[in-house]
Image (cartoon, rainbow, N blue to C red; front, side, top):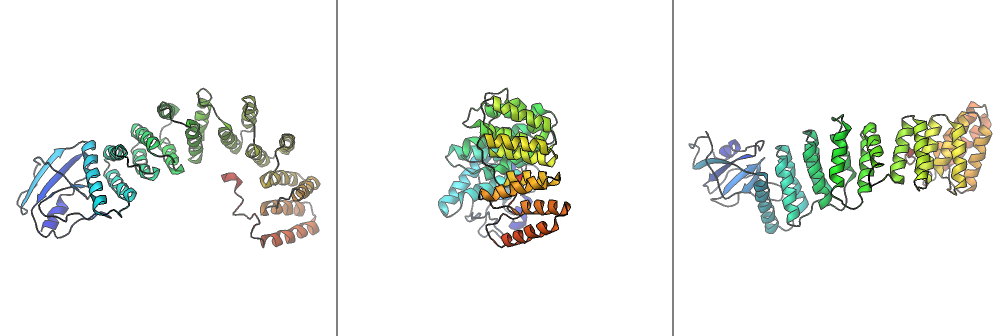
Length: 397
């Protein structure tokens, strides 16, 4: 009977109202357990339920209409603040760790956070991580991801911002997943000012390496398909103390190139050189790959020459862009020259380079030479160090 009574008393925390219940028993029929916590092990104590999590509490007030006829039970309720909920959970966490030191503190805290988020009591979840930090209990960014995700689903940008600020204060390393969650949160907001206000709040914290924060948000926005917001943030950065660096420009050049906005891409490339930034191999490879896709062989040759004059050594990605571009435009002899140069430099051709070259040779009717390179490629495929299709992921770099 007591077990059935308990099931009636599981209250969600949508309005931060908790039902407290006194039980006087010697054998509770179905005690509730949280992984690593033994609940309901003593007689004559009071338990509250936070989305089915047992928490000992010390005070109760009168509730409404549940009958007192279900055994020796007295039903009470009170309005309880998120901070009070967090304090009670912290007490339970510390008691559980003291009782069983082998319990994973991180998993235990995450379990409570998950339950609070599932109950839509996000303020209590945020208060819990703040309370934990105040006791020098620092969680990884994985724990914060649950609150960020819940805030994103509720479209609560203010809570998202506050959670991220707490994440920055607590974690030395932030998972890329956290930035992706943040980026997705802005997908329902067309006004770029909302994103820029969020950025401003974070920058006002004056934490070290805000440039990394900005670069990762731009990258995450791009990954989530919000290229307009990524570009808007990039242009906004130019007016900030934290100016775009080479990583920023490489990301933006890749975005513009993928969108086919070649002129803008080349303008940003020229501009980065005017602000004392030096293009690197990734910069040139990104440009060459985009120009290859757009069929701009003339520009591919120009930027490859510039790259060589700067003393930047080409790699597999560079030669792939050149050989494929030359082959597509019928310049098979020049493609073969670059293929031989690649080998002279000790670079092992990737399967994509072989395939591009073979395709171009067949297209030009040079079947014998195509067969020769096909046999050579098949021999290379037997080498475990050969760069195969699964290893060549330039677009995802």
